[in-house]
Structures are given as structure tokens and as C-alpha cells.
Amino acid sequence: MTKPDISGLLVIDKPRGVTSHDVVAAVRGALHMKRVGHAGTLDPMATGVLVVGFGNATRLLNYIVDHDKTYLATIRLGQRTDTDDADGELLSMERIATTFPSRRTVEKTIAERFTGRIEQVPNSYSAIKINGQRAYDLAREGKDVDLKARPVTISEFHVSAVRYGYASSARAGAPLAVAADISPDEAWKAGTAEPGMQPVMEIDVRVACSAGTYIRALGRDLGEELGLGGHLTMLRRIRVGRFSVDAPNVMTAHAESKTFTNRDGVEVTRNCAVLDDADHAADHALDLVASAAVSMDMLPVSGREATDLRFGRRIARDIRGTMAAYVPETNDLVAIVERAKKGEAKPVAVFN
Image (cartoon, rainbow, N blue to C red; front, side, top):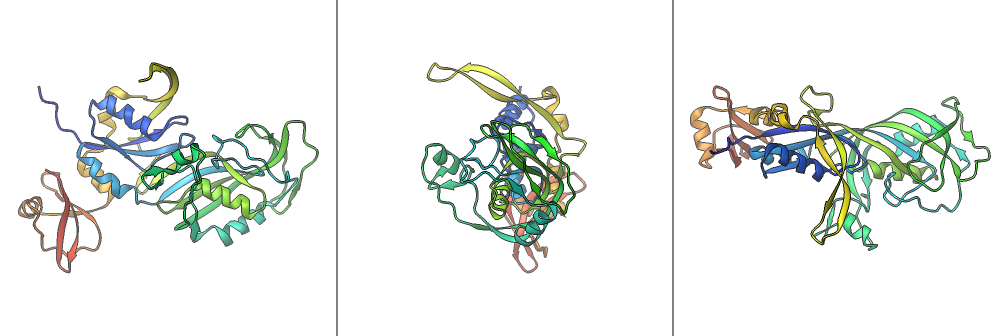
């Protein structure tokens, strides 16, 4: 019996402790199909919106990757790690900070240096490829990773809360022992820390940014600008373009520790992603037309125009950007089209 050809997009709330690839593997298992991919990698520490496409909807993923995004994050100032997040190892500092700026000072620094169009050097532990190798693989091998600055746009960088206190000087991401509750205009001068602890400052932020922005790099660079060092202790992506973590069809998942024997015969224990409603995964998905509608602007076409597009022919339509052509009467996604010249649109991907 031939399986029905299904295609669509799932919006998954990725749990902490698993990779984006782990989530894709879980979807492959739930849908019993190989043609599955995702748009925009989330680090293992990060949670939130991961758009997963299956079947013909995987053709939409390259367009979704370019959408702007919104994140919630916690930046710990006063400590640095080798990965710029709490999954890394703490780096030694020339001096331990004992005086921390006021909330107003931090907000002023963000407004002046970290909003609008800025130049950002991505993290060494990123998925960017250098001569065919991922930067994080090179970094883990102890090799130098030379990444160039590139322009990104920060449309919102809002501080929602500030905390001062003490954290472990040996382990990144350890809980904060809050020590002070002061006004937004006051700086904080720390007292004597207990053994194994050091003073730090934490800020909760909301960031809306263009594709290609690294929130870990924002935390790192803000810490450097303030002379404190910084890294993320929490990161949650709440929006990718029109995909929101609050949408009613969002699918949840959790991490489970599993032990298996690898190809070398060695027993290995690692986290895997488990979908919370795996048996009904397809019911959570947007169909192909709905998937296209949240991925790009739509272009209604006639049956004749649909035939022309599917044969690679241009149609007489004056469009500005990339659009998804569909036949409203049959709810049929036909093609992704782009402007060829004034008054003409051409297909760049066809759905049969």
C-alpha cells in the first residue's frame, strides 16, 4: 500500500538540552518519512520556535530562514565563557568586577551601541561553515576560528529586569543568589563574596533582530562594552517571521536521556528529543498552502497560469518580491515565483 504524500510545516517548541537535528529526527520517526528539515538552528541550551518542514514544504525552509526573529534572553555580566553561553566553561578574568552599572547605564549603552544596523562577529561556536567545516567543530578541536564581522539589524533590544547578586565562580549557569534590590539609577558595589562565589549582574532582555543575528554575540559584546564580560544563561526564541510560540498549533516536546551502542561498539548516553503528541504529529501541521501563506506573500493564479508555471513558463504578473502562487478554488500550491522583468513573473520552484 502506497503511503499518502503529505507535506506541511510544524512549529515545535524545542526543549532545552537537545539539538535542532534531534528534533528533526523525532519528526522523521513520528511521520515515518525521511524528507524533513528545519529553518534556523537553535543551540542545545535554547528553547522555543523551531520551524520543521516535511515533504514538499521543505522547499519553503530557505525562505523562512531569512525571516526576522524575536528572542527572550538572560545575560549574565561579570563572567565570560568559551561558548558565550552557560553550556561552556568559565574563562579566567584579569580582574573580578565588584562594581556594576545601573540599569539606566546599561539601557543607554544598548541604545547607543546595540540597536539599529550594527557590525557583529559571530560566535566561534556557531554553525557557520569555514572551508566546508562548521565553526563549532573547529573550535572544539582547539583550532583558531576567524570569523568576519557582518551587518545585522537590531530593531528592539529592551531590558525587562535587572538583578544583582552572587554566582558560582567555578560553574557557568549556576543559580544567582540575589543580593540587592536597588533603583534603576543606582550602580551596585558588591560586598565580600563567600568562597567559591563572585558578584555578577543579570539582565532579562527582549531582542527583535534580522536573520543571522547571534544573541550570544550580543551578550558577549555588551559585556565587553561595559568592561565586565558577559554570556547567556537563558535563550528562548518566541517568533520567526509569522510563526509564534503562542500559536494554537504549536507542538511541544521534551528531552529524554537514552543509552545506546554506537558504531564503534561503545555504550553512549545522550539526550534525545521526544514529541509530546507524536502519534498525531501530522494533525499539528499546517498544510502546504497554509505553510506558504505564513512563509511569504501569496499570489492567486488561474488554472491556466498554474499550468504555465508548472511547465516553467512565465506569466503576465507584475510582482515585487518572492511570492507563492496558488489556485484558490482548489487550494493548490503551484510554485514559488519571482519577478522576471516588469510585468512578468517566473517560477523558481514548482510544486506538482
